[in-house]
Image (cartoon, rainbow, N blue to C red; front, side, top):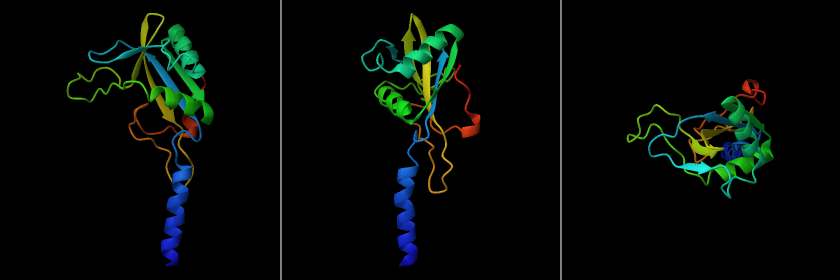
Length: 151
């Protein structure tokens, strides 16, 4: 009975500690051509225009072709909520040629970019912050040590 209670307690705790984005994350924006069949959402779309980290990363990507925007947990939550409402292009879909990255395609100042959101991994032994391939990113997580500076 004691063993069962311990397992139940750990399972209950792990859900609280393992939510992707609890430790923040990284928004990655890359300049890319839109693949056939991908929906490209304009950056001034009502779901995106007020999400400051997305707009900042797109502006940086317009200057450098790539942007890595570090996000705290609150920003991660806002970006996740915005991106999860947008169409996700999956390159491994048999109908696609597989040469362009999976992600959410966005248009900013006439150019096309692909966005992907990565949660930071957690150090907890009670659970993992890895995300499944979801509506906002390719899945997995980034180790805390691998966090790039904003670029």
